[in-house]
Length: 531
Image (cartoon, rainbow, N blue to C red; front, side, top):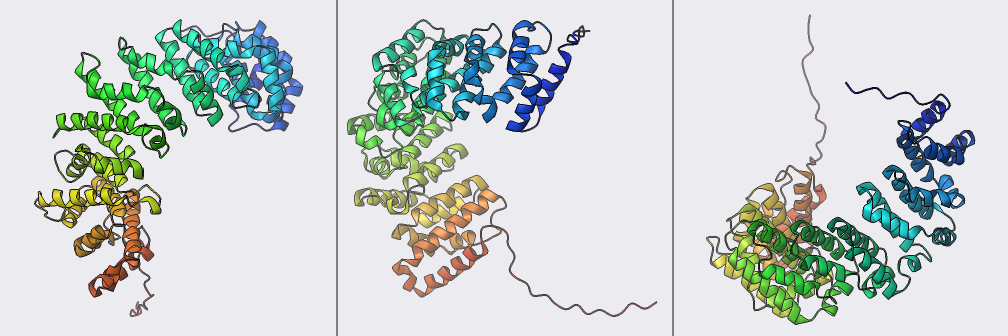
C-alpha cells in the first residue's frame, strides 16, 4: 500500500482548503469573489507559500490551480503588473506547474488588461520573452503550449510585435539559432509557434515571411532522416495552409515544389511511410490552391506540374481503395472550390477531372466514390457563391461532355440515370449525391436531366427518404436548389415540368424534417357504456 501523505501544517490548512474550494468552483469566478478571497489570503501570502512550502504535499497543485483561476478574471489580471517579478521567478522555477502558471499569467494579463501597451512594456522591461522561449523548448507539453499562447498574445498586442520581431533579420536569427541547436521535439515546437504567429494578423504573417521563418518548414521536411519529425512538420504545414494569409506567402516559397516532389516519388524506403507523406503533401497542396488569392500569386507552370504529379498518382492507384487515393481526390475538391481552380482542372490536358467523374459513379470502392462525389460537387460550385457557380464556356462544355461520356460508357446511359443511381445507395453516398445535384442544377442541361427523371424528383421531395438530420438537410437543400433553378428556366413553360415545380414547392413548404400535414379533428361517436 502507498503511504498516506502527511497532512499540511496547521497554519497552511485553512489557506489550502480555501484555495481548493476557490479553484474547484464551477465556471468563472467573479471580481467580487476574487476580492473577497484576496482580502483573506493576499497574493504575497500565496506566493510565499508557493516558494517556501513547495515540499508540502498538495501545496503547488492547489495554489497553482487557485492562482490560475484568480488571474483569469479581470480583477485578478489587473494585479499582475504589480507582480511581474512573480512571472519572472515563475518562468525560472524548477516546477513545471509553476512555470506553466507563469506562462498562462502572461496570457491572462494581456487578454484582460485595459492598457495593453503598458502591459507589454512591463513584460519587455522584465525581459519575459526569452524565458517564454526557454519554456517553449524545454518545458513539458502543457508548459510549452502555454508558452506558445503567451507569445501569440504578445505578438497580437499593441507594441508587442516589436518584442517577437525586433527587426526581420534579428527575429529570424533568434528563432533559427534556437532551431539549429534544438532537438527534433524543440524544432517542431518552434514550427508550432510559427503557425500560431502566422495566423494572428496580416502584419504578423508578413513579419514571419520577411524573417524567412517559413524556411524552417522547408528544412525540416527536406530532412528525411526522421519520419515522425517529417510527418509532424507536414501536419503543422497543413495547419499553416489553413490560414487566410497562406496563399499570399507560402506560394512565394519553394514549399509547393517540395510537396510536388513528395507526390511524385518516394521519400523513404518504407512504402507505407511514402503513402502517408504523399497523402499529406496532396492535401496541403490542395489547401494552398483553394483560395482565389492563390491564382494571383502562383504561375501556371507550377499548377501544371502539380496536376501532372497528381494525374500520375491517380493512374498508378487506379481501381485501388487507398487512403492516398482518397486524399488526392479530396485535394482536387479543394482546388476545384474556386472558379479558377475548377476551370483549370476541367480544361487541363491531364485526366484528373475525368478520373473524378468516373470514380464518382463507379462502385469500385465506397471510400473512393464518396471522396470523388464530394470533389465533383466542389468543382460544380456547390460551395461557391451563386454568381460564381458557373464556369467559363470552355470549362462548362468540358464538364458537360465528361458527364455524357461517362454515362454513355455505363449501363445507365444518361446523366440522369447516373444521378439516380447515387440516390439509391447508402446514406452517406446519397448525401454526397444531394450535394452534387444542388451544384449541378444551375446548368440547364443538368436541370433538364433531373426534371426528366421522375424518380429523382420523387426521392428529393419525399420527406421519408432520409432518417438522419444530415440526410434530411441535404435532401431539402437539393430540393430548394432544383426549385430555384427551375423558377427562372424556360423549362417552366413545359406543362409536365410545371407539375414538377408544384411538387417541389410543396416539399419546400413542408421543410426538411418529418412534418405531418395538418389533419382536421374528427368527431368520435361511441355508444355509452352501460352497467
